[in-house]
Amino acid sequence: MGHGLSPLQPQFYPPQALEMRLVGQFYDAMTATSRMKGSCRMSVALICLLFVAGFLSGAVNAIAGGGTFLTFGALTLAGLPPISANATSSVTQFPGYITSTLAYRREFAGLWKSALALGIVSAIGAFGGALFLISLSNPSFRAMVPWLLLAATAVFAAGPKLRPKTAGESHPASPLGLVLQAATSFYGGFFGAGMGIMMLASLGLASGGDYHRLNALKNFLSIVIAAVAIAVFVGAGALSWTHAAIMIPAVALGGYAGVAMAKKVPQPVMRWLVVAAGVGLAIYYFVTG
Image (tube, rainbow, N blue to C red; front, top):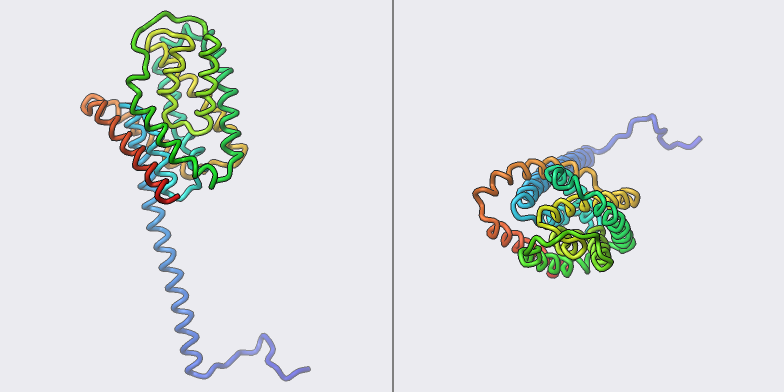
């Protein structure tokens, strides 16, 4: 047997070495505690950021639309990769599409024939758009984001001019209208910001009718597009359910509050605030890209 100490025998240190060892252990413990406290502070700040952004998103959706700019922006600032932020933002907006469709249930009652054809086209387009998104790498998608934001912001700013001006007669969806709806749905599955305004314009060409009829169709087709895209994102593991769980109730509360705010805040003011947020977010991506 050797003369070394067995693992069970106590080890003795000179007083100075023992003191240095204890000081080192104390420093390590304090450093770990400090990091833990910092992490908790960041977690609280992150929760507040996501909740406030979700609340404001729901409110501006109820007043002027454009809430996706806020949810996507907050999720990227929270540190999610762009693809995950985009996919998670789709989930946070989904309950609003359902409640909006229910609000138009009377107008929607006689639209099933048109809705069926447009729904099939929308599902196919959204599936293609969502697949295209998850086929990209995060750096590739991130390089596209500022341009997508600028394009979506421009469409949102021009929203009042893109809405149908006259009631017109409703008619079966035309081939051109179906192609436009497929393209809009592809965009909705891929990115989605400004999709509602684009869809009102494409539906005006696809089937005609008054604004409330088109809005009822738009809300229903938004459910179809979002549901298909979310299914693809879930299958690809692109969603952050933790972030979504914080934002979904906030979006719902904001939507409820937005109805009351709509009576006090002029719609053009809210619209240009959303435009400013979209431009600011695009600049942020250009600068940090």
